[in-house]
Image (cartoon, rainbow, N blue to C red):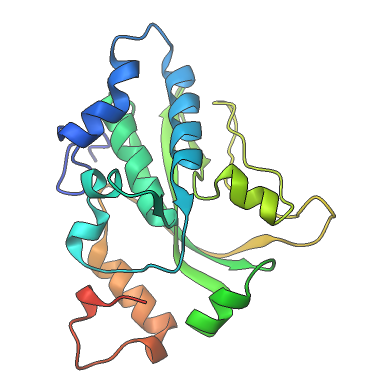
Length: 211
């Protein structure tokens, strides 16, 4: 497996990604420090938005994601992975299914459920071990939900905000689909179609579906 490769999706040779990582290329920071700073940059510079869902291939290309002001969990994970690979830090996409318990009214209206799948996060290889981290929920969104934003220390996993500040259940993982060397678009489409059959029009091209 090559977790440093530039691919169609992880296109880190593009101008957009090179601009994002420019400040880190000549930096004397360690890989751990670079990862932490990149994590915070992707977490907070792109607002979390799970509602604008498109399965077009271009939608999951990092250079296109970089041009947006918001993205869902998979998009933001792809962006972070691409930046990390550009700095020669091994990383890969990890997918699963989650259930959100707070601020889910619009989710339930759109999807018919408060379960989200596939949910994306990042695996990064630091200090001889793989760590899980999720850059999905930006700090301002966390404040709205009264949830502490996920921090990443470069030493421990940081991917689950189980409770909010009041001790109420916020998020839980229901299923783990494992990690992927590249973006598994076909798997993601089939997964969404299996879980949300009511939102797909079989007469349309599923890869162009939008909410």
